[in-house]
Image (cartoon, rainbow, N blue to C red; front, side, top):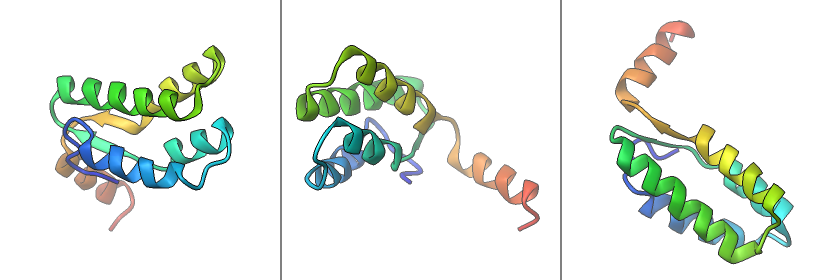
Length: 96
């Protein structure tokens, strides 16, 4: 989890390391789904998603279907919002 992921610098590095253990695009999708980033600025979120998708495509040369799956994962896992407010809401919902 990167609570202030910016344009994805940290996530690109983490995924690069995770991808070294991946044998195929299916493994790559699992690695991609294992990271989450939160960013306040929408343009940074969009840039992070684009960078992570480009990195995935360069590493695995996926089919169009797999690219759509990767895009969906990134849409769900790179969240545009305030991480402090999100955490506060989560704590209230879970009585922490």
